[in-house]
Image (cartoon, rainbow, N blue to C red; front, side, top):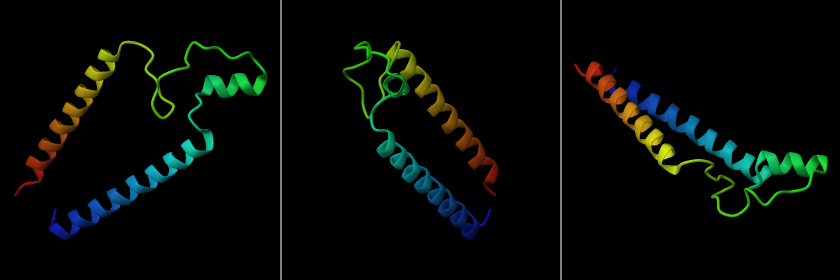
Amino acid sequence: MSAPDRRRWLILLGLILAVALIVALGAYRVTGPMGIEERYGHAVGLPGSEEGSGGGWLGFSLEGDPLLYAVTLVVLVAACVVAYLRWRREESP
């Protein structure tokens, strides 16, 4: 792949990521930090529970072992790095 083609693909990727970020921020602004259970319960008049309240970041809270989330994240990042390095090696002249 030539340098101009690579630059075009990087620009396209940047635009896609920017649009995805704008859509995600818009969705967060519309829904707020409330989870689906809280929104549904409030909409149908169910009593709220204090089970999930407290903590969390931008409406997200971990339900389960944080170590499993960390291991999963590390495995996904490692897979992406391996795929990138392999693709880069195949593209080299």
